[in-house]
Length: 554
Image (cartoon, rainbow, N blue to C red; front, side, top):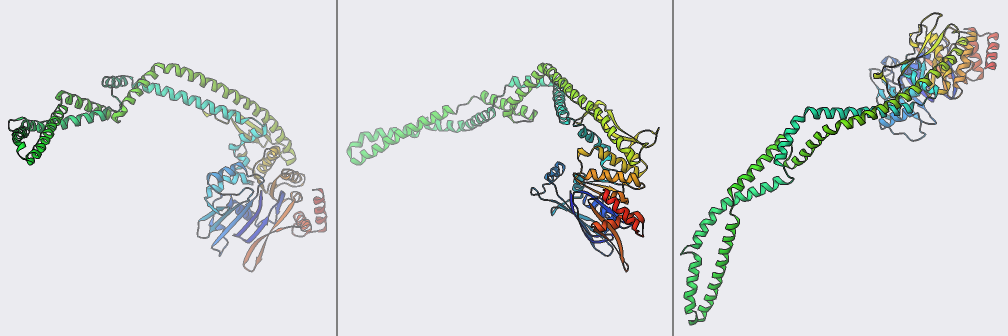
């Protein structure tokens, strides 16, 4: 609920701090004293459009700060704060500040963290519910009527929402399967051609690397083969190095015993002959290893190029071709087995539709029952509020299937007829603001247990009525405020007397400067203000006595 409101330099208000409590708080004052300024100031922290004309003359900027406290933070506000990643300690009040500049522009903060004005508007519905002469939100807005009726009925809306999600998901699966098969059928001939091409080539994982390696080796062998042939001819000729070494070794062997040094030379020459022989063997082995079949090279190159061409065709890597084959086979298999799958999905979708329809029809029946009960409850409130000829109706219309949803199959709207024989019309079509406010009050009383915003404000709901009607309004406002917070701007002494707290708004002039002030009245102050409301400018003893009677009765 709203616990504190601080206003600085808003129109006629220089500086004002107000504390509010639970129950019914009434705000009174003479016409033009500035009650609308308070509502305009509060509207700023609720995200209303910033008007630089609200800045007090001669000042550069103005600000409004509102403090709200909750036993449990409303879910809508908690989710909005979480989505915006705003920090708030458990149990910490919600402090909203809005600043205006005289040259235009505004800024906003929630608990000293900067936010956009859209954020204020998003949470405003859970903070304050304002009903005035030109009410176009809250209970007047038909968007919220279905949820109000459901809460009044105690309906199991979660079961319908769950059934709707189940049906939606079943339809999505069915549609996806149908689309997949239709696409596969459209591509079937192309799939078959592509698969035949791949199957004919039968690519293997890692094959590109193996073929590329073998091709590189064969190309290298082709180049080295010529060089090795030249070496072989040198090595195997009559004047080859090995033959020369052997001739030299035989000659040295014959004379080697003539001198020790010759024997050592022979040993070295023998080793050279052995090494040269080993070199010859290595060359022969290398020549054999590098022997290549030109046909094999052509075959490797042809397959490698074919694999790479297919990979380009399917926009993938060569190693991914085997997976492409599996995907194509799966797509073709899906065409063959798809009808059975679709049959199963269609059965599941039909079952989910039946589940949803059953839940939605039960919700519809609950709504019809609750609507009759609500109509009777509102009707019982109309006569005391001087709306004897008026009628209230909760209209429930079944939506076409394409508009069904998680909220069921119904559209709900509160309708009224103000005169006998007149057609029912939406609440916001009523010409009289006073009638609209009293209808809203009757509806609020009927829906009293269904909750709503943390703070409810009625702006001049008693306009144009008095006596017993004003007393009935006051009694109902007090009843509504018993378990929460309700603020009423009023001109009616009967309503003012019902307040748990009473604020008087006054305008005063000091030279050329006009100011608006707000005072929390004590018991004697309340008596005097209610007496003024009864008698006018001159407060008479009779008016004071009547004020005492109203306060005692309240």
